[in-house]
Amino acid sequence: MITITAATRETACYEENPQYHRYGGPELMQLEECELRAAGKGEVVVKVAFAAINPIDWKVRNGYLKMVTGKTFPRAIGSDFSGTVTSVGPGVTRFKPGDAVFGLAHIRDGGALGEAVIAPEAFLASKPGSVSFEDAACLATPGVTAWNGLVDKAKLTAGKHVFVNGCAGAVGEATVQLAQMFGATVSGSCGAASMQRARDRGVHSLFDYRTADLSKIRDRFDVVYDTAGTMKIKIGLGLLRSRGVFLDIDPTPSKFIRAMVDRRLKRADILDGLARAADEGRLKLPVSEIVPLSDGIETLTALEHGRKSNGKVLVRVN
Figure (spheres, rainbow, N blue to C red):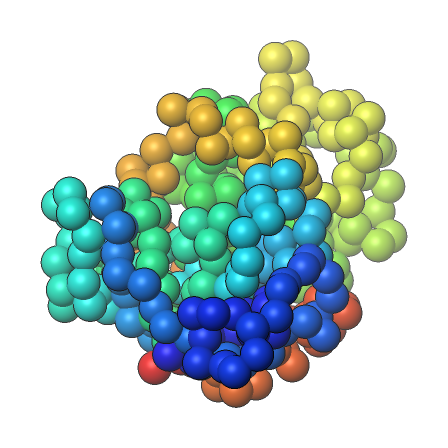
């Protein structure tokens, strides 16, 4: 079993000299041959087809969320994936071996960038036959983040006006498409190179975040969603209509803890909603690059160090 881990060696790996693991930089990642445990209660084992790289992957490895992820090692890398169920644990009712699925690894465990991953049943959805494994692997983190903000927090309804800062990023594009699916008008900001793609998505009014002073925008919005994490709160609040909602994407430990205990965040329902949206052609994120697992560490490191991509970067696993 080959997986990208953030540990050097451990007793579960077929290595002669187990070593302890620590949070840190990309130099800690290496390909290892590891033994996958059996699925526990409510868990599903998935043979991974594709995994998507997200900024949360290196934030977890760097220890930014160690208040949530804890001190249990080794820790594998990767959150979003698509693949095929190979086995299920006790109590699993929604999936069976052979089912095509997509979803997220639990943040405490990771492991999407590997040949197989164990995920909670509630963190998975059935992959529609009309959606490729590549496209399905892109959906989970951007889609859940967008849905949680728009639906669970902002209570978005038809006829509202949404402003998306970073509307050409993965979460931004998911937010644009889902807001439109719920009947909202969408405006936003992005880089000049991405403006045509945003126009093609139907973004109403566009602003270049490098040159425009967003505080000078005259329109007011029911929801302002900073999906890029670059908007000053004062500016975002200033763009709101009365009783509007400002949302930002910064994944602080306290937000993750609230999300983990918030019973309103039904991941299975959200993922099923994303599956329906993708099946209907309402949600699709662009893929800019697909690399083999052997190049996963190098690619993740480059993205962490600031390499730009014009879409999601995927790792082909199986």
